[in-house]
Image 1 (cartoon, rainbow, N blue to C red):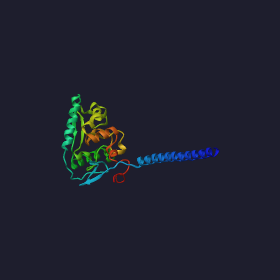
Image 2: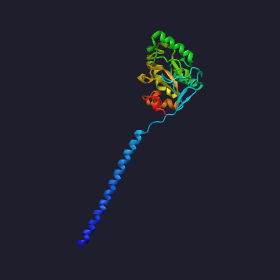
Image 3: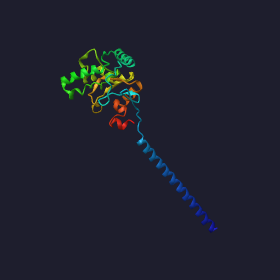
Amino acid sequence: MKKYVILLSALLLIVGCSNLKEQTASKTDEVKKTVEEKVVKKIVKPQYEKKVIDGRTYINGILIVNKQIGLPKDYNPGEDPVAHQAIEQLMQAGNRTGLQFVLRSSFRSYDNQAMLYQNYVARDGKAAADTYSAEPGHSEHQTGLAYDVGSVVSANDFRVSFGTTPEGEWLKHHAHEFGFIIRYGEGKTHITGYQYEPWHVRYVGKKVANEIYKSNKTLEEYLGLYPKDLTETVK
């Protein structure tokens, strides 16, 4: 009888050790899986598709123009008809609420931008002009997708103070509903290279505009161009 008790105890001990090993192995696998998942999440990066077509740069299908990325001198598309319809709808919607929106600037050719830029440089010097005006070939207005809007009461037009006007406040919170973004946002000069321009909107379509509005990103950040160089981020 005593032998049976000893044998039974030995068997129970063996089974217990086996279960302990299985539990330990299971916990080890769980920890390993968790670590692997965290590593995967950490190294996965958004994918950006860059295409250069006739000298124009597109990232994920969006035409990008900034201080580093330009447009060909002969690129002269005129005002984009979809963007034109959208800006008209935007201003009409704002004006129905009692605002007084007016369009101040739309498409500008390479030559028109060159003339404006040279005038600004002559007046304020290149360093100052570069904070608010684009060199020819680097202006969003040449895309036909950008607009400068103002108010019929124009004292604040083309000024940072436009952002505090009723029109400026409305534009900031509703432009995305019509497919536009405030292209040069407040506090983003170190990214865009330009001062805050609450009057300058760029058409990107409603989906992208909504995503940028919710994220409070610049177009450069949204397209993976900041803070890394284009050649490092876009494969």
